[in-house]
Length: 631
Image 1 (spheres, one colour):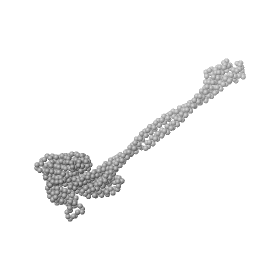
Image 2 (cartoon, one colour):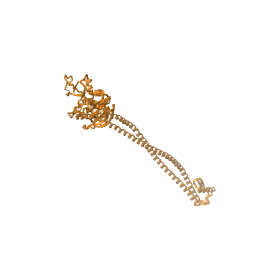
Image 3 (cartoon, one colour):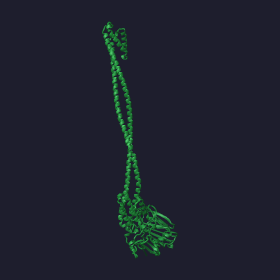
Image 4 (cartoon, helix red, strand yellow):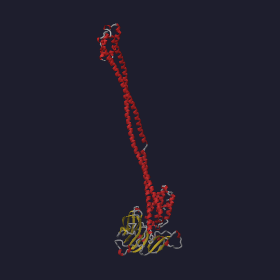
């Protein structure tokens, strides 16, 4: 029903697969009615349909896995073959289990590779995000370095600009001072040259007058000379730079000249020496002024050259400052942080998506591995179980045996040895040990009395996933569970796993054991003294998702009494399936050639008025096309 409801495939195919997984994994815990007939076959057929569904999802999510239609056809072909069985005892799965396991192992490898590839994609996104983060952090560091360099260049430019500004001011002042010095130099040079000329004339006139006798100096022919001399002396006397001795001499000379008398010392060589000294002094002064002017000119030229060099350096620093600022802008133009944020968002999104995808892959891998282990374990057990032709064929469910308590064991504090008791009846194919009152016991073995009876159940428990399992017995009165501790060696005595013995109400006791994958024999014995009897066998562990569920049995054969079964009152009832080739057969077929659907022992009377009466004794009875045999 689930498979047909999935046509055509919807977009939520994964949800359909999850629904199928839930169906396959939980069907073994269904009620006995739901487990009857073809539902038991669905444990295998449904699991394979689930595999087909996973193959379909794999084909949808990864086109490289092949054509979806081809995958569906392949799975459907296997599914049709395995769902034709109505009992796991036929084990139609095992003759071709090599092909099925190979296909499922290929699927398992593909799922694991897809899971790894999905994680690789996440790792790639993480590497990209890490690279983007590193580029962002590197860019932050680079920008910080560039900003520091730009700030340093700006400070250097500011310092150089101030230096150039100050130097320009100094050069301007030096130029002004030089221009003033040059102007003053020109003026003083003219005065000195003029003074030199006057002194030279005085010296010349004095030499001319002193060459004459004193009596002749006042003659008319010398008057022009004296007049010139007076004028020259007057000019020289008024010159500030003539010196103190020169001014005194010139003052005296003027007085004498006004009285038209020459001083007596005029004739002295000291006068001429003094005049010559004055002349030399003027010449030295002019030389000093010239040297000072040349020095100022040299210094001004040096300052101007320094200013030009500083202005050139300022231009260079300005260009470096501008380039450093541009480098900061260029570096900041690429928003590495934004790139990192985008890469981080992509990575976070891939992590979130892969989380769900990884869970889905893990679930699919777990289911496929569980199916593979179940097929392998089932086929190995079936091969071992059927290798001895002397053993009866295996059948699913439990064998239930009920015994009568003698009066001597009424109110017994412990479960009696049922092998020493009278068997009231037997029923095979019980899907679960689940009896809540006396009516449940009577429904399976009609000879069960109201009080004072004991029971025994035989079954084999298949463990698919190894681990810790908790087994529980709930009974009224006492009960005990014996199980193999090693599935590989069933020649050993079974161990007491749960002890819920004694007189008590419908109470429960549990115990936890660690089991490896395999098939384990189990035997439950118990008894009811008075009141309403109850007996419930449950377990939890990896195969149940750690939820407490009924314990299914893959084979209910009484493995302790195969050689000599005990006699019991009533009839043995066996029901068989009619193949389609015998539909509408005019005669009763040879039932030994048919598939047995179930068996019930201890039937008090062959008295069946409708199909419900048959189903009440053998739940696997179909609505039509079946045969029976009574012993």
